[in-house]
Length: 369
Image 1 (cartoon, one colour):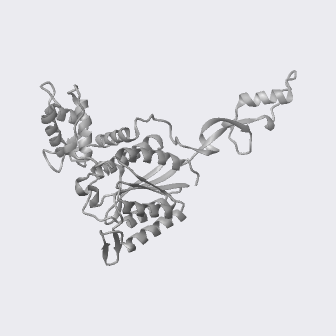
Image 2 (tube, rainbow, N blue to C red; image 1 turned 90 degrees about the horizontal axis):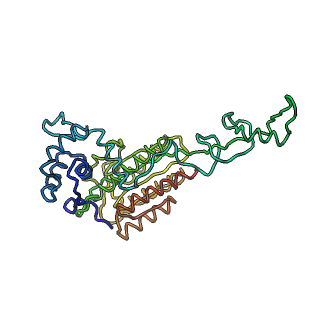
Image 3 (cartoon, rainbow, N blue to C red; image 1 turned 90 degrees about the vertical axis):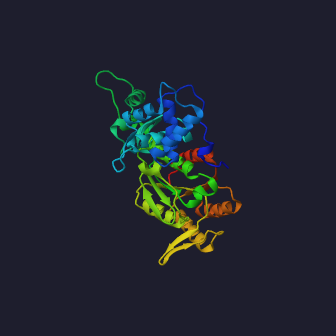
């Protein structure tokens, strides 16, 4: 298993380019790791410059900071004079960088790019032909094929004897495209940075890459992002770069309850949950406060979690769990959770995590539930 991101292990690629572009790539990585803290990212970039000579006399860190401002990637922080904050342009750039890093460089395509095996009223014509049926639109009719059929069926007579009947008409089949509602759950409990391992950064990168993938290739889809610790709450996609781990336990029940509530409001037929976590459920919210147990698998917490997995199954909502851990007893819990839900589970490093989310996302979208 990958140990995650640790700044002290980060070594920039050797490059002869001392200009803006090479510094900007490293800056984007550091801004993600520092949860959008521009000052801290620039401080680390200065340290890297001292160690690896990222700049020269022709282009220094001062030039780079000025270019960041001129190009609209950072702004003066109105609340803290003398400090900077990233802009919406930077937020989008971070998402695109995550997409390229995790999913590879994908070519843009038209809206609603994902197809089902079914045909019907859709927004893109296929190469399949069939006979005309009541309800087909006129723009589906293939005039060339229909006229050819009329000639074969009725012949060509003299004068005005040409005949085109309903039986001669052929239409070009439309491909029916599905629309999917996805909730992405991100664990922000303390264990995501426990024992010196930074697991939240790869989790954030996967979330940002998925959000950008949906925006670019599946703009008609719905993607909701929620985080869960002691409680669960929804966040905007633009907040992902700033996401930080808190002093929280893992209330998986609260996360699943919120995810199912969000999906109930969506009118799409395809619904699914992706859950990125590294630990076992350890917390419940009760009338008198929080019930917590970080030692082992607490039966009370586990049973409620499994009950929600079963409820999601009854609602035909598959849950795909991405486990950033390799503890055998945690795997046993995830296996039981997955069996109850009839979903999927993966145990992966950063590279595998991103690849599997991409592949499984496409596979789920092919289903007509």
